[in-house]
Image (cartoon, rainbow, N blue to C red; front, side, top):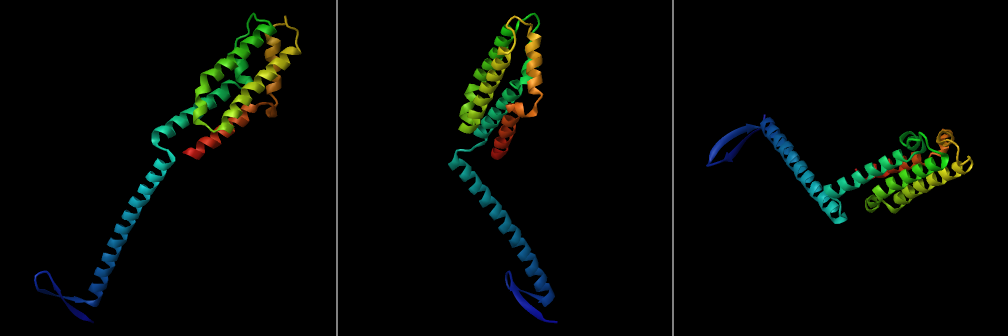
Length: 186
């Protein structure tokens, strides 16, 4: 065995074997490894924070954007034809009265959420507008095929029948797009 004499702290002689020296070197290397890892993690966190600051992303703006996506998702759900018909009462109304009530509901929902456009991409806001416009168009087209003085239940049935076609509901596509964009910022 190899023995070495080390002069440590105030001229004290300590004798160590080669194995003891290797073990101490390994312990020191492991300790240094953890120090380097901790330093790198701190540096990466600082770089990440700096990048977010440069890009204008902070927790508050991220919260506002996510809330906008939540509100617009609620808009898309509430303006889907099925939910619109289910939420809008038609008792005692004619087709024309019910048509106007449905259109008013869509427009007021849209106006309530118009401020959210500043938090989403222009393409996403355009999709929201297209959803509103498409549903207004569909309601007007289906209502035009019915007699104006017919009971509102006929319009509700026709709308539900139309909405039963899975390809007819733009709200599903808009909801998927909202979820996709929201996941990108999380």
